[in-house]
Amino acid sequence: MMVSFVFCLWVLLTVAIAVVWSVCLSQPAWVLHPNNLHSFGLQKYCVVDIRGSVDDLVKPIEKTCFPYGKALRMGDLPSEYWRASFLLLSSGTFLLIVSVTIGVLSVFMQEKWDGYVSMMTKCVQTIAVLVAVSALLTYPLGFGSPFFRYYCGAEAGPYNTGHCSMGWTYMLAIMGASLSVFCPILWNFRRIKHYDIIDEIFV
Image (cartoon, rainbow, N blue to C red; front, side, top):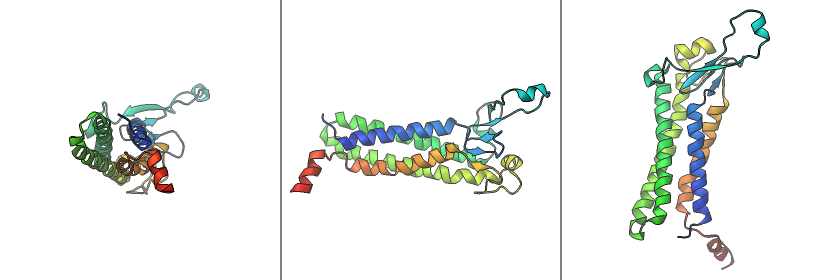
């Protein structure tokens, strides 16, 4: 069965955003310390051990990354808001993968199921977008936790990073969320062929 360019674009965009969010979940660069020695993510954080002899100081400084706690467990995350953000973004990524899977499978389904599958795909993808946006709005609420304030200053609080700054991972997640808004829109136009557009222009 032939598929349109818009459908292919929808698949590529959806998969790309799912990959971006998956990378963001695993990267510890959501917040950066101004001395570039520490960084914090949803699952783990990175620190630099600056202890040692004078001779050690001439060696290249390397960051060491650890999960919060001894192992990656939800209860070890330093803020309940970060736990909620992790769950929400993970759920949004999973729902996005589910939506693109259903969308691709719909190409091979009978036409009598098309309306139901189309509505389900659009709803799942819309929910995925809303859940991911909620995750990104929830994450900064955790800046008031004692763990975060210990590293980024007592003035840190919800939506206030203190003397730290937002990292590239958080910005990448925001970019993915911004682009994900177009996924449900593209799905609505997945059946439009390029020659249909040309006909509408010249007829």
